[in-house]
Amino acid sequence: MNQQSPLIFWLAGESSGDLHAALVMRALKGVLPNARHVGIGGPRMQAEGLKPLYPFKRFAVMGFIEVIKHLFFFWKVERGIKSYMYKEKPDLCILVDYPGLNLRIANIADHARVPVLYYICPQFWAWKHDRVFKLKAMTRHVACILPFEEEMLNIHSINCSFVGHPISEEIAFELDRDSFASFWRLDKDKKWLAFFPGSRENEVKRMLDIFLDAAAFFDPDEYEFLFSRARSVDHNFYMDVIAKHPKLKIHVIDGYTYEMMKYASFAISTSGTATLECAYIGTPVAICYKVNFLSYLIGKHFVRIKRIGLPNIILDQDLLPELVQNDLTAKNVHQIVSRHLAEEERMNEIKSQLAQLKEMLSQPKPSQMMPKLILELLERYARPAF
Image (cartoon, rainbow, N blue to C red; front, side, top):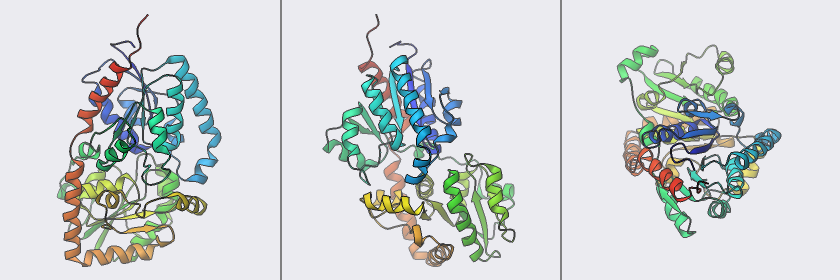
C-alpha cells in the first residue's frame, strides 16, 4: 500500500448509499487527504473525488423482475470489476448497502485478496439469512447503522461495530416554516401533506399516480399537497405524470426535503430511507410499498419479518401505518391519514415514540467512527512494499 495515497474502491448503487458514502468520504479527507477513490457512486460521491467506472443511474433498479431485465448489464459490471480488482489491487474495498450486487463483489474482492469493509449491513434479519455467512466469509469488518445488528452479527462471530446512523448527521434545515412557505407559496394556515414517491424511476412509476389520486380525496381548502422529486428522477418524466392530474393543485418540491418532512402535518412515503428520515425528524408517516406482482410473490416467500417500515422494525412495534401491495390504494391512504390526524392523543403518542427512535440513532456518529475504522483496516491489511 502507498501509505500516502491508498487506493479505495467504493460501490454504492443507489441515492441513499451515495449520500451516506459521501459523508464518510468527506470526513476521511481530514485524516487521509491524498486517498484515491474509484468505483461506483452518484453525484455526491463524485463531488468528494470518486472516479466513476460506470454510470450511476443504471444501478437504480428494484425488485426481482426489474433486476432480471438488467442482468446483462450487471454481468458486464461484475466482469469489469473483477478485472479491475486483479489488475489494480485496491488497498480497501468499501461496499455500501446494495447487497444484491455488493455481496457478489465482496466475493470477487476477497478472492483478489482485497480487504472488504461492508458499510450498512445487508438486512439478513429480514430475509436471505444465509447472507450472514457470506459476510463472515468475505468481509474483514461490517459497519452497522442499526443498533440491534451488532448483537446479531456477534452471535456469528463476525467482526463488526455499530457506527451510528448517517441520518443523524445528514439531516439539517436551512429554512424555518415561514420562509419555506414563502419560498414555495404555501398557505401557512392549511395543513401540509408531504408525499415522497421514491428515488428510482421504476418506483415513481408505480407510486406517483397512487399518491396523486390519494391527494385528490383531501379537501384542497384544508390541505396543501407537497410532492418531492428526487434528483435521481428525470424532471420531464415526473412532470408528465403530474400533467395527467390537471385539476389537482400540488407543489412539486425540488430540494429542501428535510424542511418538507419537518413542517408537514403528515407524510406519505414509499418504504425506504425517507420513512426513517421522517420518523427521525418526528413527523408521522404512512409507509407504502408496492412492486411488480411477481416480485411481491417471490419476496413474500422469503421475507422473515412482519413489518416493512424501518421505524417500526427498529422500535419493534406497529407504530406507523403500513400499506403494502393491494392495500396500497388512494382511498386507503386518505382514510388512514385522515384518521390519524383526527386523533390528537394517538398523534402525540406517535411523536413521543419517534423521539425515542431519534435518541437511539443519534450516537455514535459515522463521520467519526468510519474514518477510524478505515484507517485501522488499511494499516492492518497493508501490503508490504517491494
